[in-house]
Image 1: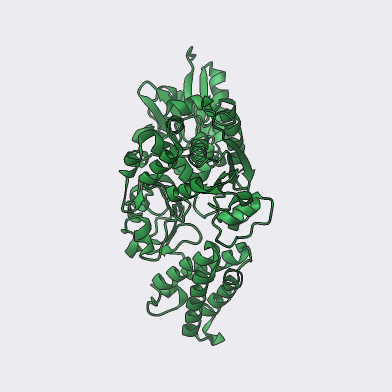
Image 2: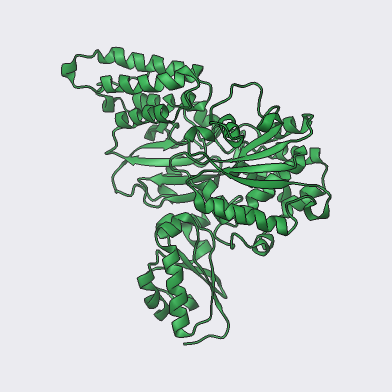
Length: 526
């Protein structure tokens, strides 16, 4: 078989796909097609976020792209024999990619291009609404850009959920010779990967969002602080910045507008606490990552003492679509004060792990069963940690609460960065609570006593609660001591590291008392 016109095949270059053999599949496809005389146009796209199907191979057909997966290198010859390049059916065939239910049911705004384009092709990016937001922003006065972000109701997607437009307005009104835009891409929460997917799969979206932020507040320099454990993201972002600069989307004269914005990539220091915005600033300045006392706020005195916008990856990545389509269209998604969409990440003991972008208001039950397909073990799901290692464990009685910042806060939970880690009925919540305290003790910067000492004492108290009866510890007394300690950490810590560590501990104690050997529910702090 030989073909004159190259057939386009997409194989992801995303770290999750590469980890399970995507590079080997791509190499096998090239070698086998060359052996058969088939002209192949191999595109290394980002992942669609359906990780249980990776490596996912997509073939461009006259009817659109069709999907096969998970594909191994050994299966490539048989797939070609079956007519994969013509979109023929096979045991690994999933039909048109966009019609796979996991994707079709989503509401992708921020992730609309993810898995569709070549991440480092500016032409691909532009062909899919890329840089339309920046062009719109260049035609507006700075204050109008800020007003669009305010009107859209965008809130920080890093976990704090602070209104993005207010932060930008504060920096815009500050008087300074130099202002900065800093992206916190130190994605360290358990079960989270949307930042990494963005940087590896659609990097120009982040660059565009940060550039718009710079135009909005008068900042001419920006930094992306990327988790050190993300070498592929660092490499992709570095190359994307180089290409954007060469194409005139960054530099001293953006698209001939006379306005400047320069962007640099910095590798993080490998400490969880550097995900906290002021510890990150200390690290960016070349110092040890220790939390700063506030005030002053970074919007007034941030990087190098200058007014600084700090947002996370998804916050900045949400901005281009707001500017290109208008604030009202973005605001049409969501509920209450939680507007737009949130890319939620399904991980842990889940059958179909991956990324699901939905408007606020979807429930945890819908995410776990309609998208996730239930537990990977086939056992009943017992607890779900939402919002990273400092997020609460959500029991089944709360799985139907709409995923909304205020609705979750009302029950002592957080949405955080959208990480969802599922545990089945074999999980021991007392051990998970202990892990939360131990994690804090290891990762604390040590600046404040409630976090530094409280987490260490927390491990000791949980150990006493779980000690064998013969040790004669007064369990009710130890439980009360743990609650008092958590109260001190919540109200006395300088940052969320110590202030949120009690969330998983108290939620485990309140909702799963049997795991602590408590005969009756102990819900004093529920």
